[in-house]
Length: 444
Image (cartoon, rainbow, N blue to C red; front, side):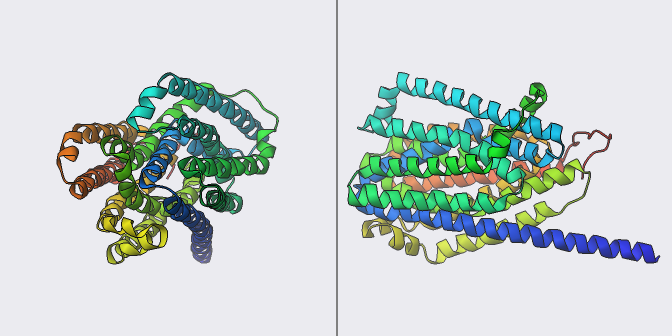
């Protein structure tokens, strides 16, 4: 009896320590991401003040193009976080080094292919997005190379649970972009070209710092890789996470194609505030994922997903309430007075983005456990969202501007909720069977 009591006490102590570690690491990542996000947010104050509404709309569109360019590589962060978390033997460490080098090379080839496509369709793209400066497109493409490398390096840091540097890189990215916007837009008057160039500099500085911090892995001894098994993980991870990324970003591209250049900035401003809510809660998923991977690998039970989901609901809900009570405050801090006219859209964006933040937690948990049965349904939701936006373009054009913007946001909210329901269904109603481990047991 005594040994049983001691065992229970030890389990309770271990669980308490695990919770403390999760909240300590999550707390730092939230602080770092908030600081980085604040600097990213502050970017829009000198950007909006130093640009015309049309140029600011172009800048907002290029930001969403950057988000979409990450889709081919977004699943790689999860894959490399998984590989790094499991690299506990010399053989696994050698395989991780080989995978990192192959991944960086493959993403470079994907980026080159994307650049060739953009070159072939440069004219129609510039016309559709009403961009008069081709340099904007090519600077954005150069950022794209850093962005497809970035998930691989982030994944290594995340899998090794090096949250200290993972957090600092979030701060450096935002701070660097903010300082460069002050220089290039406010001082030199470069307009949208200056703001996009600032993003280029900030992102590449972070990539080089991440390369230095992961140099042991990047330059380590390599070995033969099981490519078939690796690709079986990459494809569903990329599609599952890409579905969420698409739902978050696609609205801006449709808006840019529907409304005149001088109007788009009035949609981009509240949209940036709504998307900030998603970025604010991402650190919880980043801390959760390697812990779920490890617990699944060791056939251990973990409640970290419930901790992440509860914390995300509290943080996201509080942010949405704040946006509802004080919708003009963030606009006053960041934008020129004329942007206050879109304050009624801020609560709409906040509440419509909230289901997406919760969906991200559940999707991350499903993918960490290898429950890929949900992926085709998540992709179907994303495709349905894109098709619905396109089909509703005539209705958007026919409505008054504010009502049309609200229709776009409501479409986003509806499909965010649908994405959450699909993730919840596969989490609790139809969890499915987990992949067998080497000892023949199923995790968790």
